[in-house]
Structure formats: structure tokens, C-alpha cells
Image (cartoon, rainbow, N blue to C red; front, side, top):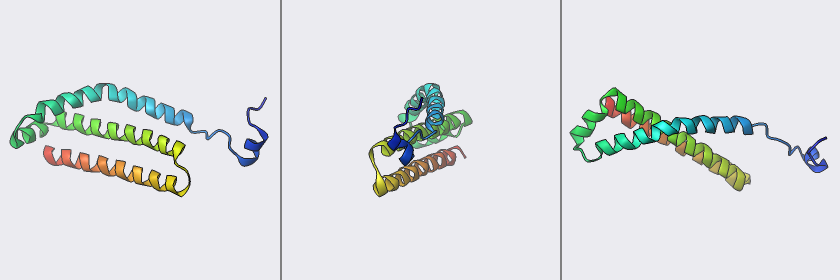
Length: 123
């Protein structure tokens, strides 16, 4: 028994065959976010009231710098993937393609600049 209508069979609008892969990617990133977000908030809060030299000294240690970089990468990647799914669902045509490109460019730029800033403080 086929669940595709005749029209879907003709136009090729069946399964995209990517839903499970995306689901597992989001599940893994969500599991990673469970410990990373509280650590990120704790480390950010600890460094929040300090002077410039205190913050640089705090983030020059490897553990806070690595945790902040990992948290930044996973958070931005997770949000970017969710935004891409929303754009794919609700924006179509050329505007959708341009919005997807802009969203990916913004996400990867944010990741690069964040990791560069953390590495600059750590080194």
C-alpha cells in the first residue's frame, strides 16, 4: 500500500529522506546543550563584574576558554539549524534560497568571530 497520491508520485513530492538525519543531529546538539548552557551561564556570570584584566586572566585559563568556545559553537549551530528548518518551511522561491544563504553566512560568521575572540583572550 502506497501512501503517495498520484499527483505526488508524478511531481516527485514524496519523502525528502533527510528527516531522520536532521532529527538525530538536533537530538545530539540538544543533549550537548544540557551541560553546556549552565556552564556557559556560570562562567559568563563569574566574569561579568570583573575588570578587563580580571576577565582576560579568567579566560586565559584553558578550561573556561574551551567551555565557552564549545558552548558558543553548539548554541549557534543549534539555533542556525532550527532557523534553517523554519525558513525552509515558510519561505519559498528565490527569497527562501537567499534567506538560507544569509542565515548560514551569519551563523558561521558568528561562530568564527566568537571562537577568534575567545582564542585571542586565551592566548
